[in-house]
Length: 170
Length: 74
Image (cartoon, rainbow over all chains, first blue to last red):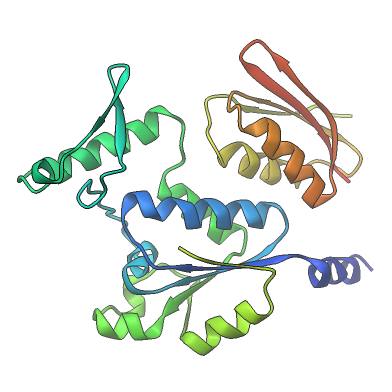
């Protein structure tokens, strides 16, 4: 009886799919925050990792951050906001330092790490699909990726998307 | 009836919601989970969370810098 009720709930559940195309530290947040929160709100969630987004499924995450090409980025610093000219960002060490600053800021503000959010996604049965073509293209194997993922392509994603209430491209 | 309390102080979006959802699963239906959070965004977010999941937001208040919520599991 309970199983039946749960199945009915699932049939009526809202659903969301996200195409995850970016694998930098900053861009890893929107898909994982929305994916885990949607799962917490009883939605069925599918995340499709393609191109640079694929690295977010690697066993060991080593996410990089760069202010390069992002003139809108302003870091809070000593009561004001500081942006970094692109010219500075190309200097050796500056990208790494900016990444460290960003990670410190994330910890200080009580923002979850991507590792934690990804674990929450796995725990809440978010369906994680790695793009097979990207694996081939960048010469990754399924062994490089965390357990519990699926492999698929455009048709796999589109089948999910055609039945989802919300479809996002990030 | 055991008390169910979640201290989400210092945590930022979406952690208060994720932790609340995780804890709600262990709260018997009909009982209330009390939450303390410092994320100002949690006020709108717990209201939306309850509307979407059907759980009842019994109260939503503020105690100094801390936002307090009571959610009854439905």
